Image (tube, rainbow, N blue to C red; front, side):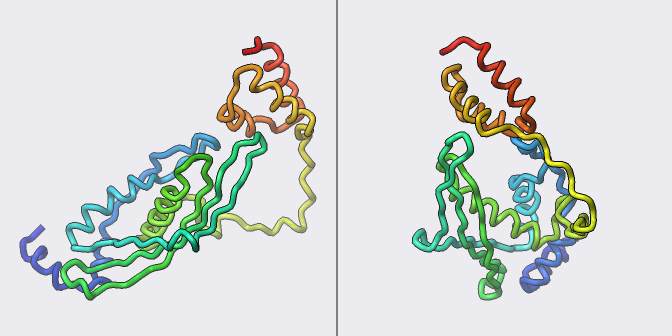
Length: 214
């Protein structure tokens, strides 16, 4: 990199800097794996790590702002196994500032969404909002996000057969047995996606009944 190039960076306006950064963002691998459904995804840390040095190089600052708590949307949710959680929908804005000319800036509104069964809902919504804003701003995408990847025109196709899913009685029996056998809510959450048929539910019940009470 020539010294003259570095000297030119402060002269760029914010949009020119954004264009330079977009051109230099490398490939970001999917280093994360969803523990419940098993799919791979790009982690926030990878996005932030890739952009941090470029922001410092070109003199770009992202200033996040969150709406006041009274205007945030929060709804209590409950899993099929009785776990209590919250669904948060929080509006943010990101001021994108040219550090060399602080009056040269623009603001982007973005919404963060999170479903949480712990006390991390606000943090998760904030991370989600910033991550996906940065991915859109700098053209970082994940496989499966392209709307043309699927063509939902199945109305003329024959309906798929209805799966022989577990009955309510089976779910109730599993919920009844689990605490007796020392199984907690997290165990139930992991079991849930596996209960796709009455046979699978029956097998789960049989295994629970075979365990000693705790």
